[in-house]
Image (cartoon, rainbow, N blue to C red; front, side):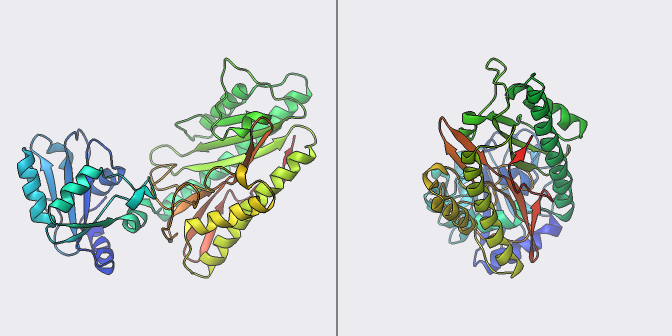
Length: 393
């Protein structure tokens, strides 16, 4: 949250970028950056603006009937109170006329996770006399990054998830060999029980997919469609969780074969694993050398390996998503040059998944997912032991 102590670094960044300010807008929670940066709490159903200038005190534009959510706004900072649209636009013009300001928008919707300001609001701000540019780098630096304590929270959860996944796959293999196979849905419920035992939580249940079902990256097992896990099956587990009360998400995908894997499964797995490792290698080299690197470059590195293996048209999603300090699918830089034009720098403090996959409908789906955090001169990959070969259970 922005306060007197955290204001100075933001203003230095604005000055370095040649900006007069960061204009933060929200309406009914459309922009998650707003609540996090401004510390707004409680009922907020009207339009708000907050101008963080490159020098001087910030000023908020607030609605007359919703002053409660601003109780954490420093009293020394400015606050204008409006009721009518005329007064709102008048206050806005006084703040931004003739200024170059950053807002949460992405030109051409290049990165939709940044594109939080409606077109009509952009028109209003520009009509008030401002030049508007994207706040992409500001969001990365001041919204998406982790603290050291948050990294440790993530690491603890990552090790728990990895252990739970391996045990669950071993359980499924043992049950299949004993002639009492568990179902996809049953194994999903088993994973949720293990999460509870490990004192971690999730908002959506894990994915358990057998054979061709794994060719759907967002497959959901169902109680009313019990698919057993038998000897000879290839199994995909995609699971994510965090510590309660502000923990940081960890997100992993594991692959196993019940019994010896087929040659086809090994072929596809090898392509996916090598693509994952190509992205990691590129990032480790660049981060270790403190050289600039963008998420799109890591996506290209992974995608080229899968394309060379002959599965390029079956890798249908980005290589990885941002994991910011609040959200599993966050607003920081993604590892993507397919779905979006991700050109933001991967700076120290940001984190993301690395999860290439190959999906052949009706036949097979394979994905390998780890997480990575950019430290100062080091890429931290979790869990500590990543999957090298198909697990045979």
